Length: 152
Image (cartoon, rainbow, N blue to C red):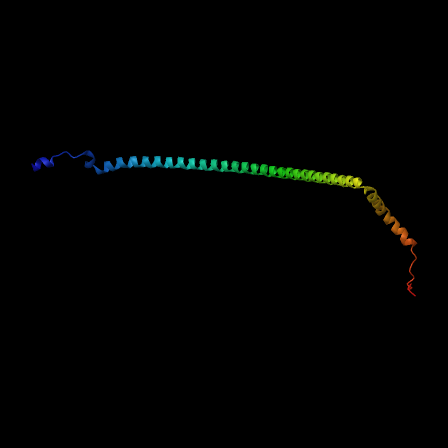
């Protein structure tokens, strides 16, 4: 029976280890070549993606600058318009104040007229208008003091 165990056929690959190694070497070198090519394709693809990304960032930076410039211009024009509106508003407020004061002056004038005091106030006003002219004439008409005491 021992004889029957030793007569078992041996597989061909086990019979020649050198030939089995050759078969394994050939597929390994072709695999290495495939992996190297695949690696190079991936590196090329990564480089292409980097270039695309840089181009995209450059374009995006350009758009951001354009939008910032536009926003800056809009802000400036808005500030100018706000200032104009404030000026118009101030002018309108001033005009309203002027109109109110004129109306109050007319009311006071009418009230004085009704009380008969209008003539007196006009005379006073005329006297004030004439007074500065009279002061100069009066100063010339006054005798000049020679530095002597008048209480002797």
